[in-house]
Length: 86
Picture 1 (cartoon, rainbow, N blue to C red):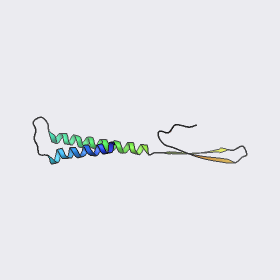
Picture 2 (picture 1 turned 180 degrees about the vertical axis):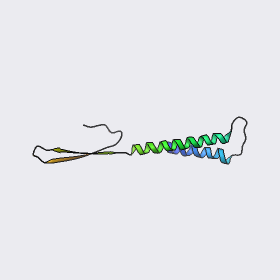
Picture 3 (picture 1 turned 90 degrees about the horizontal axis):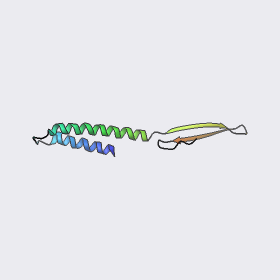
Picture 4 (picture 1 turned 45 degrees about the vertical axis):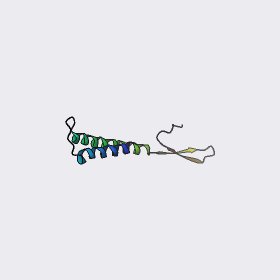
């Protein structure tokens, strides 16, 4: 959701800055457009970072000795948000 919001903010800012030739006394639309474009880039980058963090997984391999002397390997895949199982 934040990636789409960042893109929308950037597009609205670009429209205000480059496409509109309207002068109003109470606001500088070019400055507002640049601020919206900057905010859009920041929100987009935060969305990308959060997406990358969500996809990270940890693979744990544990080898235990069985009572008869053989080795038993267990593979565990953990994703962020999973509860720790001991």
